[in-house]
Length: 270
Ligand SMILES: [Zn+2]
Image (cartoon, rainbow, N blue to C red; front, side, top):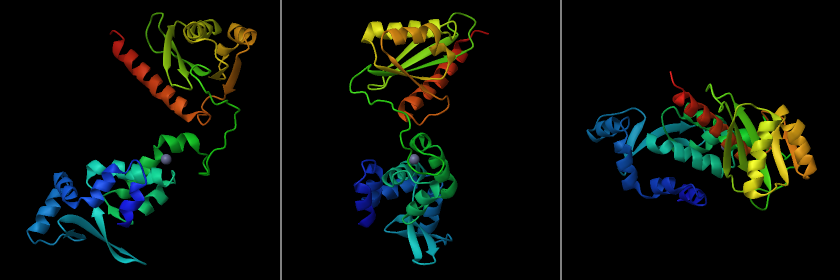
């Protein structure tokens, strides 16, 4: 089976392989879908549902293609749409939504395909962090060295205010580039003194890093910078908002920031 072969080369294809190879199972999943079940029931009763048919008990959708003629596409239950899109989008190496749609539509159908696939691709973290608007793969612009051991290269980011009227208004997030280990340190301001305090804590625990990646904030100047210069630590500045340089860490950072703000909002007494 051609499509199964295409998908079986992809590690994320488990659900899809099951879908294409085990039709009995797919039939069960289609029946579980609240939108598809009435269509299947109607067809079983001999009613005509325009555009739909049953083939080996599997619900299919007819689609006429100007070149290929009438195609019988497998109808994908809601619970498997996301993993199907993910499988194709990843296997095709993150193309735009239209290419992703085009490929999926050769075999599968589900309602609102265009909107759902566009939504998926627009929110794909890898697409958003690793590509320019042209769609070409981003070439590494910054000489960030690849770490070979933990706490050789770290990312630091100060964030706040979190909205609490005490000495925990800000949090300094440190992420190890190698292990993605995260350290948090609360403080009452976003100053070089506070960021240096957090850095010293990291050094006490894990040793001196070779490189620290920061945004261009003033909290990495003054005594923070003097300290780094004295110990031969390279400070690498990335323009704020540029998330391409290390997409994975940036995405951990932004998820974490949102979570911290949410936690703080819940904790704030009335
Ligand atoms: Zn993508």
